[in-house]
Length: 145
Image 1 (cartoon, rainbow, N blue to C red):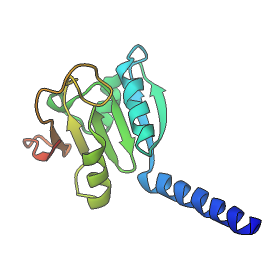
Image 2: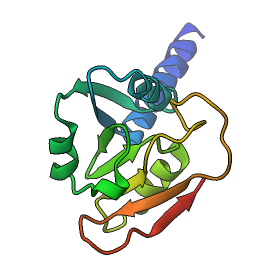
Image 3: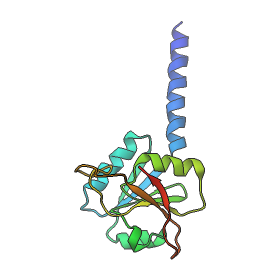
Image 4: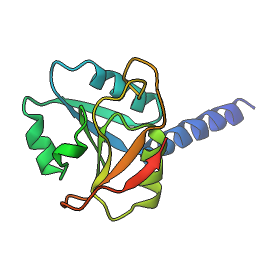
């Protein structure tokens, strides 16, 4: 009987590890003095991501490298697999992005909207999550959350 419990515990451990791998590893690039970025990293961790935080003194370099235009910039840039997630994007659109795998560079919630994950304040309306294509064409609405 005790082996059955050990086997069940092993299966639970394996399934939680598989779920974490499915969600993926995330690398969050942030300005060294930014606290909301750390709060966003914690939000991702609570939602199943393995997050590594890298403080970078020149965030413009990171944003350019990943094709993030000025009008789509957020506070920090998070790389998950082949995608960049710009700013305080809620986890729902991130999961959709990873499930659907569209031919875009990533998604963005520009600026630092109050009430978004990692930010203080009260959410005043739906967040518009935009596509990042790396091109000059207008960003398209990816999700409303």
